[in-house]
Image (cartoon, rainbow, N blue to C red; front, side, top):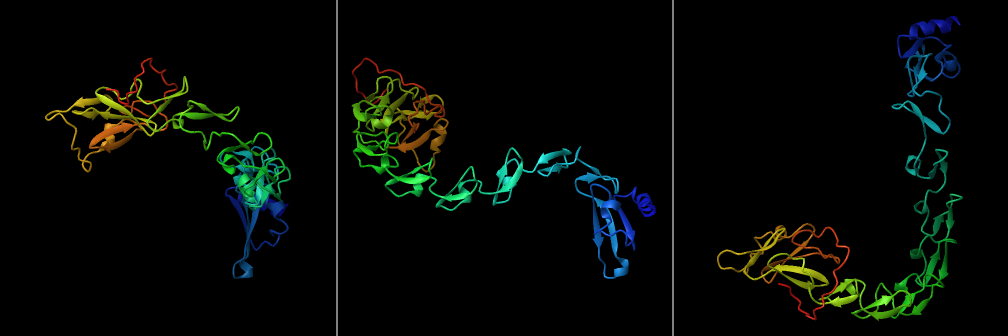
Length: 341
């Protein structure tokens, strides 16, 4: 007790206790008694045995001075927790697999790391990670791991004879993936096997006249979603004033009339002087500055043309960023003109 009181008096004003030539302060035997809770014993071993020095320090999760180190956390942490120095609270060792070693996974509810596979990436290509046992087991984990005439049964993780998808079947067949996984005669949506101007009815797998999107139509046509018919002219042109609308590669294409130049967000303006847009210098003109947001720009026959992609029906001089939800109905006129002026 005398030794203990002496060391306490020496150490209260410092962050650790040092004692020279005191064999009783041995880190292997006496440090729990001398250093106190939340502390560690450090034993230095200089060249001369007579100058051997042992001392106590508060551990990294504590503050104060031995033997009165206080935990930064409000209470002692459990075995699956650690002390957060900043928040001064006990935290679970893991809340994500990334907190664990490579060969471990995180038990989220318990908050600790356990030996086992995290997911399929932890296993070989010929194995999958059993989510219940957390061990790598022989079997498939996707169609790509099976033969060309097999698919992966995800419930059994076994390759079974049958078609993977429509690509596995002949051009005039589709893969019945909802029933027996056999290739059957009939049309399919993708890759489509109906002729232009027809679409595949997914209920009976028969080709029907009409369209469901623009790619079902010819390259110079668009699909009217209201009556599922293809039309070859720009109905209600989005191009703006003094512009010309044509259909190219199933997209509305805007360009200016002869004698007009592109004017962003408006349409086209009349040229000064000769009144022609011919002889545009492709090398010296920034084509895109004349077109709207997220639109495409091209120089065609020395004229600037703007257009939207992917079934977008907006005005390319203004903005292609927001898709129009519906297509206006076809007019009653029987005109098939391909240009609206």
